[in-house]
Image (cartoon, rainbow, N blue to C red; front, side, top):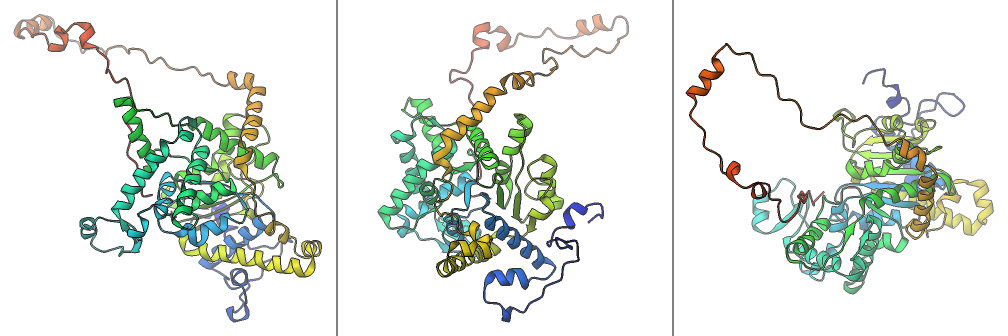
Length: 486
């Protein structure tokens, strides 16, 4: 790494200096002397790659202990693989996270285990480097090392289409509205079949908004396309529509809440993976500060990222918080002490990080019973953040009020916003024909004499109204089939 890239190496393993400017001692405690996971993270990971993990833990502990409202961006098949049961659900159930940014596929696969036929087609392990042709013959779908029967997908499609035709979906709505309603439907299905609570059902119960920045890239929306096509081709009744403008605006309203109305007047984010969930999660700041031009808009105070993408590949998935500072997405005054990016498969470490967080909260709960709350908070200030209400922030229930407040800001700044919506555009009219090369005298006449008379083309002979007849179906955008697995 070039020595000019000081921004990315000075603070990676926690920084070389303590708060008072002295060199930080390299702690190397024996694991035999520890009793808790957080002790291992803090005192038994002295250097190299493990120091990054120590830094990740330290920042998570600081953010939670500070009572920071956190957003979560998660990509990858966490629901089809069952990881929402093992660590993601328990993490969100703490009340520490105020919203989620993920993929359409995560929402789609979240419903599989609640289907009526799910017990007939259990999920199972498959070999990553096995015979995929044989799996195809067996009608087994593979997601890395997770396998399940193709009938699960077909049943899920039928379920989604049946849900989308229900009365509550027959209107235009934002993505968080849609996924809240879908989460309630999943919850009913889970109760009916005695299945554990899934991701969307949990978020609906806790009123955690779920955003999907690329809704067309997944099978929930593909099933909506099927119903839309029946409406267009056959006149079937179907009025569901996603309000993309409204969804982005709603995400900005929640960011505004975090900066100006939340208890901490700041936000933190945990980014697992990259891609669209990461970018959508980060874009409210440039939307509010750059595009709308509102004042006093700050990026995330805490930015904690786990990604497999190397920083050299140039992808958004790989870019560290330091780079996001240049876009205004992360707080420039604090990023060296409150941000970190670790190149790792997050599924390897998240179960242990979540367990350590939950164990620490449980320890604070025991101490509160023994010491009393005020004495505990005085001795362990972080306990206040850990023991905040598990009810959480319930931003979905505040959505109409928060959106209205942001809309009022737009109205106040309307004159300026209109003045900034102009630009000296180049003319897109017909361009001049390219100048022909000079020819020798007589060449033009000779050419005309030697060329046979051309027959009129069918289009040229066709009456103008017929030649320019529009497509009776109207101009419609083709729907690109996305990657429903990821």
